[in-house]
Image (cartoon, rainbow, N blue to C red; front, side):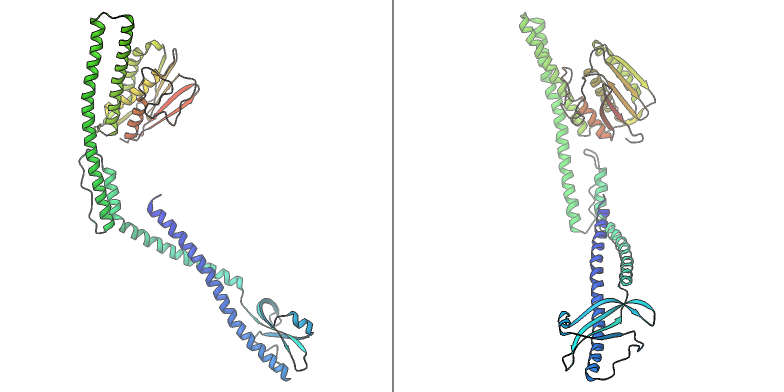
Length: 428
C-alpha cells in the first residue's frame, strides 16, 4: 500500500472516531441543557401550584393553552415516605386537546399542609422527540463527516504530493540506477533539511556501492585468471605423470581420482565466477534472441553427450519464442535447464521440451519423489548427488530470470519433474 493511501485511511479512521465521540458528547450535553431549562420551568410552575394550594387560593386552570398539566392527589404518610422529595423523569402523556400522546417532562414532588395532610403533585410539560433529535443529529454529523473527510483528503493529497516531491524524485532516480553505469547525480534541489539529509545519505550509499562493484568486478577478473592457471597446471602435471611414468594400478587410480576432483573444481570455479558476474550485472548488452534455435542446437549436443542414458527426447514447438536479453545469458539459461534434465534423469527415461510463444517447459523423469520446491533454486541444492553436477545450474538459471524479471517454477506431476519458464513478451 502506498504511503499516501495509508495516511488517508488512518486520517479517515481518526476523524470518524473523533466525530463519533464528539457527537455522543454533544448529544448528551444538549439533552442535559434542555432538561435543565425545562426542569427549572416545571419547578417554578409546581411552586406556584403548591403556594396556591396551601393558601387556599384557586389553582391554575388545566386548560390555560400552554399544554402544561398537573394533578394533585392526597396520599398517606406511609406513601409519602416511598417517594423522593422531588423527582424529574421523561414520560408519554395524553394531550386531550390534540387527542394524541406526546413525550413530556414530568416533575413529581410531595408536600403537606398545616394539618399534616400529604399530597402528591405531578407537573408535566410537553417535550421533544428524542428519537427525532438523535436522528437529526446523526444525519447532520454524517453530513459534516463526509464534507470534512472530502475536504481533508483533498487538502492532504495536495499537501502530501507537494511536500514529498523530493522523495519521489529520489525514488525515481533510484529506480533508474544501475551499478557500473553512467548516471545523473542524486537530485538534491530541496530546502527541507530531512530530505537533504536523505539525499546525501543516498549519494553516499551509491558511492559505496560503486566502489564495491568495482572491487568485485576486479576480484572476479583476477580470480578468473589466478585460479584457472594453477588448476590447469595441476591438471597438466597429472596428465604428464599418467603418460610418462610407470605407475602401479593403485597409483594410477589415485591420480585419476585427483584429476576428476580438479576437473570438478574447475567447473565449480567457472560456475561461481559466472554466477557472480550475473549478480553484479556485468551482462548489460541485450538484443532479441530466438529461444527455439538455442534449444534445438543445445538439445542435439546433449543428446550425444548423454547418449549413455538412452533417454527418449521430444521437442514440441507450439510457437516461436523470442525475448530481448543478453545472448550469452539466454544460452546459459537454456543450457543449465537442459543439462539439469539430462543429469538428473534415469536410464531409458525421457526428456520432453515444449516451446510456446511465452513459455518454455522441460519435463524429465528421474527420482520418484518430488524435490523441495522452496530450496531447489538455492546454491548447491541437489536432490540426488550426481558426479556431473556442481549444484549451481538451477541457481544460475534463477539468477538470470531474476535479472530479466522472468518467472521460473518447479512442480512434480505424473512422475515427471517439470520446470516451467515464463517470459513476459515486451519486457527486457
